[in-house]
Length: 364
Image 1 (tube, rainbow, N blue to C red):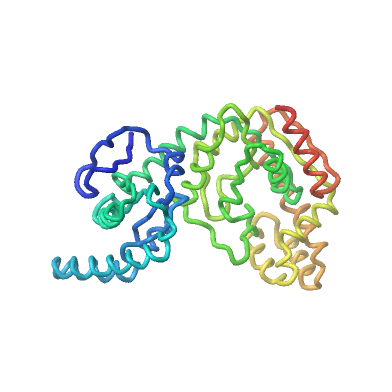
Image 2 (tube, rainbow, N blue to C red):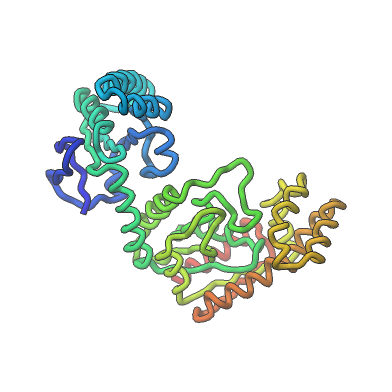
């Protein structure tokens, strides 16, 4: 059990909190500000989702102090504290000046050591109620792994499947508008979940941060209510689904299969992958990885369609030649034991999807 301590020294052994309680995402939410005192590089790798990165030293300063520490520990401390005081003063002025005197603040660093203590001492001097996360990010990371293993199997999943381009993500969004609990894994992964699913200009989070985002979402769900989720493979882009979540999704007793006429599916592709219409070469470059699966003749036909600018025809061929057969194989294999409930829609207009979402929500 991990507890949050206000009074224990930030360095040295982890002490019990005055009022022991499990470290909890809801507990994080109770703070006005959560400060991650680590460097921007560490923060980008993973952090408590609602944390504000106010580094005691930035990445360059962190590297310089680390190099100095190997030669002269005293000089390294002088440099590090001087940089820290300047950085914290600027952050207090620009990031924390709006806080009232009763604000609660949580601070953490890598292990709950010197960087947390520098921030906590300054904030307590001002008068803010300031807690330090014992064990810092390192213990938080273990808590995330353990939390996913415990939390994912506790929830009941309603898995929404269907061939690519049938509007599954849009129906999930409609279910969220209808007040249903929705786990949007592709949204958390910043990826549309296929070989060509990268979102232009948007980088995926790292694996550790992806795990943190999933757990933060799962812990906000009511276990007494279903959680809607799109059927996914083990990976979304470069990110791996937590094993416990993946297995729990495939144990769902009901599988909802969405279908949509092909012209509408092509429309969805145009809207979701419109950047390939303007740059067909980049699409063909990605599709080369499918040659071992579809053969050179099929790939050459795709390439010819792209070269002549027939992108609508290419989108349809991609679905018929590759994505639809792949979906049929994987869904039959992974959800063969689930009760199949087809959902046929004629279009992906908001009114249509909202009506379907309300009907599904009413089923309880």
